Image 1: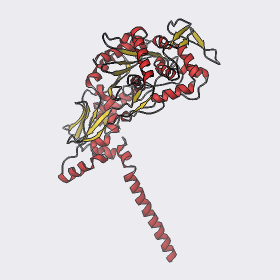
Image 2: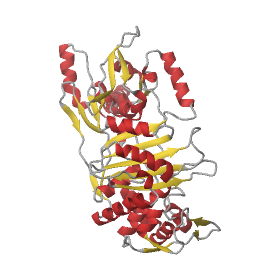
Image 3: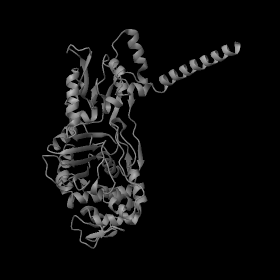
Image 4: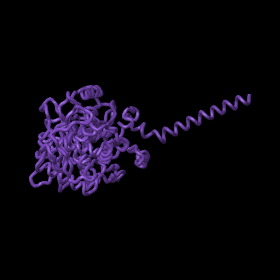
Length: 476
């Protein structure tokens, strides 16, 4: 009998211990992820009784909460200033569908439940005050954001503007867009109807083409290849074999030039200026796939950045054969990039070879305006200062007298690289333009897709470069 009692006691004690360990695990380890889960309805119900903090672009409030007067059970209503303009940054906050973008990644700060806000929560509880969340201040310039939106009229795609010396995102526009206020409504029937409409729209207005989708970068990837060549001992004056076409090794496929490159030899600088496919295919074949991959990864390929928006990694493939290396060298095959990634490449050249990691949130302020979080810059050396200087000069030449003349601004030093990429035979071209302007220094990347109102073919130099010029002019 005593043995049975001891067994029951031991099992009971182990079960109590397991329960305590599980509770401890849930509270200390999983609490943050459970609270932040956008599908946690119970947490969201509690949040709707809290004055959610603001999201700001500089000093402009772009998301706020006001007391509700619509007769619903919800105490506060989330409102968005110029919602379609800023939705790629704020995301949405919905009772039914959770949250996205900054509304999701900084949800705990916005509702006042982060670990850094425990003292404020205690004071609010003791004093009986209504809990209030912190404000999130972004790096977005309203003026540049509006200029980018206006420049995209008539196109689908994305624009990213970046401060190269800090990594601050100054503008981030994706088109078409949507109004997150429709998903924040307290009329849940309207919210469901809006969700159905937005998620089934073939134009994909909720897609983040700037940071969460990857596309073939086309000839803009030649910037990475040119940098790898300079780092490997080439100079801007190195002569490159540039026939009118080149046969891909082991295949019956011939890769032609899309422009007149002389069909003999040209310098590396001239090859970039004219965007000669055969030049860069030969450079890639000479350097090899491993050297290209290592250089691409220094620029940020195959890694994730900008967690505030859940940005995805751009891709440079591994284990390439010779033909695939040559195609990858002109931004085709399985090479794919976000506009954010190509902004990182250009910013490195402006920043003397240093890549400053991109960021979107400058600081988080408590209701009493004390700073709970402030961004700290992080950078790494990607190419030498001399390589960066050469790349700047070659990109300026491409705008002065090359494929990027559509980005010229009188009296302003502008550098750029155009790109026109194919995804598959059934889809039209993608148009890219990767650019910078100096004094003040800024990087602007334009990515364009075709939709029903645009021509069948889009071109980097003819379509994307003039869009970039409009945004660059807004920085003057």
